[in-house]
Amino acid sequence: MLAKAYSATPRGVDALFVTVEVDRIRAQQPSVTVVGLPDPAVREAKERIFSAIRHLGRRSEAANTVFNLAPADERKEGAALDLPMALAFLASAGHLPKERLEDRLLVGELSLEGMLQPVRGVLPIVLAARRHGVGEVVLPAANHAEGSVVGGIRVVGANSLGDVVRYLRDGKEPVADAIGESVGPAVEQMADLADVVGQEQARRALEVAAAGGHHLLFMGPPGCGKSMLARRLPGILPPLEPEEALQVTSVYSVSTRVPRPRGLLSRRPFRAPHHTISSAALIGGGTNPQPGEVSLAHHGVLFLDELTEFRRDVLEGLRQPLEDRTVTVARARSTLTFPSAFQMVAAANPCPCGYLGDDKRECVCTPPAVERYRSRLSGPLLDRLDLQVTVPSVPWRELAQDRRGETSEAVGARVAEARRWARGRFGADGPLSNGDMGSEAIREWASPDDEGRRLLEHASRALGLSARAWHRILRVARTIADLAGDDGVAAPHVAEAIAYRALDRRSGLPPIGTLGAVK
Image 1: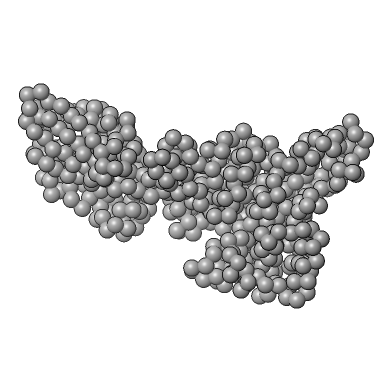
Image 2: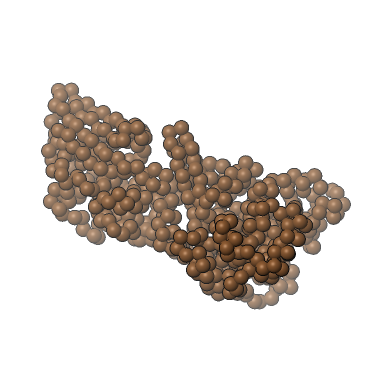
């Protein structure tokens, strides 16, 4: 007898809907076949399924059983199809009414004794089910908190195959206390900006970057506070908007590189990969494509410490995600797109020894060594960093003073107000922040006054700015105006934005000719 069940598997940050068909024909020599481009985990499902059914106490006559996973030309991956395959088999054997499998999406991995194990990608599956008008999703209890954050669709969690069979046959829904996983990730204490002593220009640049969603590079000698500043950026960013939280949680739901989310993420992610990271791990990819660090930092912060120690090819891979806000991973079997609307913050030393231009210690690097070191950061990549700030060492007198700077709460309030100002200007369908403005929005909202334009033209000639750098200066100037509460972009806003382009034509670093004695 033929029976059908309906399920889905993750496909990037979306879902592939799968129809599970089971047909059984009596035979003296029973066999089980799974067709429809299953991966090894799906092919092995038959062992888990029949073991779970035996523990359920069900017996069926010997038969040739064929599982077909449609669409047959799309590869099926993972163990999330265990539950629908088991229920479709039970329906085909007459142990379950076939009509009870309609208008339901079934997702879950089975253990040998029939317990439901959590699976990856539940949130994008439930979101896709809601978009397609599915009435209900049945999934493991451990995934219930994650799936239930989606409104407008019924989500049922169960502990075992037996729970699901009783629910579908008798309408007996699993009790709520069986679904016992807390909602939301653990809340960690964020570092406060008040801990940073001195560095007023760097603190101001951090505030501007947060208010406009701009990419930021700190360059200075070791110990000057670059990493300390960067790690305090999340503390001054506003919480995720509801739609942003769904997008971020969807990325974490499908990734095997991070803990499975227990609910809707509320804080912006902060990712800080080591400089030995590979291109596939940073950008995304692999045999079975996974989101990389740029996607795990979606709507959050990607911090690259010791930027010049990253491999050149890895850094160059950032150029497209920084512009397009998405990553497309093309493979022979499929092409997947992952979101990557992250805010990049980087820290680097000015030379191999780290003390070029420092007033405390003499640089011991040769001019060729400095040139090779600087060449690790290409012009096109630097062009995409809106704010490039040199961070000097803090004088010991300032460090010895028992005082604290402005708190993250106070700075965060100004950042939130500037972002509200920008969102009110752009409207619901406009860019999320000033850093996302396109050329049309720049012309409409960030055109400077006459004095500001003359200042920008002079800087363009003096620094040899590209068209991209020109637009990025105007985006930053718009953010500075928002922080000041000004409607228009004036010369002072443009002047401050230009001051943050410290590394254009290497102007922010002492020229090699000013180095001391060559060692």
